[in-house]
Image (cartoon, rainbow, N blue to C red; front, side, top):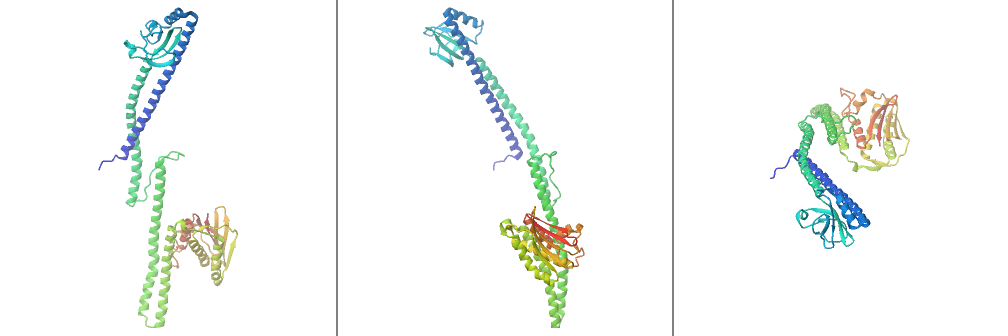
Length: 451
C-alpha cells in the first residue's frame, strides 16, 4: 500500500503549486505582452521612417534620398537598416545586406531574415520594402533589442519559478501549521468528549464583530453540539436518579402489600388487598408510560405531522373534559378567540399535551372553581392557553416545574412523578414552539405556543 501524504503535506504542496502556477501565468503574460508591444512600436517606427524617406525621394529623387539615408543613420549604428536596392536586389546605397534574401515586392511590414551573408543570415529584422521608380527602398531594424528583452524576461521567469517554489514552500508550511493547530484543538476536544469529559470547548480566534473563518464556524457548531450533549446527559442522570427514587416507594409498597395479601386468609380482606396492589401497579405504569411518551415525542420526525384544525382540536379536548370538570364541581369554559387555518401538527401528541394541561388545572386549580381552555392567535403563532384560579406557581418555582421529574414537593410525598409539564414542553419543541407558565392573578396560565 502506497504511503499517503498527510493533510499538512498536501496543503503545503497545494500552496507551492498555486504559487508556481500564478507566477508562471503572470510572467508569461508579461513576456507575451511586452513582445507584442515592442513589435507594434517597431512597426510604427519603421512605417513612419519609410514614409518620411519616400517623401524625400518624391521631392529630390535618388541623390536627395541617399543624403537623407546617410543623415538618418549615425556612424557605426547597426540597429537601423536603411538602403536602396536595384531591380535585381543589389544594394546601391545605405546599410543593409549586399543582396536581399526577401522577394522584391511592396511590403508594408514583415519580419524575416534580410540576407544570406555574415550576420544578416542569423538576424531577423522587421522591415518595409517599397518601390521608388525602378529601384526599391528598404527600411528596417533588427530584432536584437526585442530578443534581449525576451531573454531578460525568460531569466526573470526562471527566477520567478525558483522564488515561487521557495515562497510556496514557506507559505505552505505556515498554512499547514495553522490548519494542523486548529484541527488538533478540535480533535483534542472531541477526544476528551469521547473519554467522558463534556465540559471542554473549542476556543475561537475571531476578533471584534468578525464572523470568523470556517474553523470558528465549525468550532461554534461543535461547541453547541457538545453543550446539547452535556445538557442531555445531565437530564439523563436526573431522569435516572428521579425515576429510581420515584419507583422505589411504589415498588416497596407493592411488595409490602403483596406479602400482606399472601398472608391474609379472609377472602374479602384478600380481595381488598389485591385492589391496593392494582392501584400501586397503575401508578407505576402511568409513570413509565409518561417517560415513554416524552421519549417518543423527542424522537418523532415532522413527516409524521398532518394538517389539523386547532379549533377542532381545542373543542374536541374541551368536550372530553367538560363532564370531568362538572363532576368535580368546577366550571369549565372553552373560549375560541380565533379560527386559524389548519396547520401541520402531530395530533396525538398535541391532544396528550392539552390533556395534561387540563388535568393539571383540574387537579391543582380546583379551589378557584373555574378552568378555561382558550384558543387565540398572536404575533408568534397559535396559542393554546389553560387558565385556572387556584394557588398557581411562584415565578421562582416555574423553571423547576418544567424540568423532567421536577416537583415542587421536594419530599415527593404527593402522588405524581413530575413528568406532565416535561411532556408538554417536549411537544412544544417538536412543533418549533414553546411552553411557558404565567400568572393569572390569581391562579396559573399555561400557554402552548405553536408557530
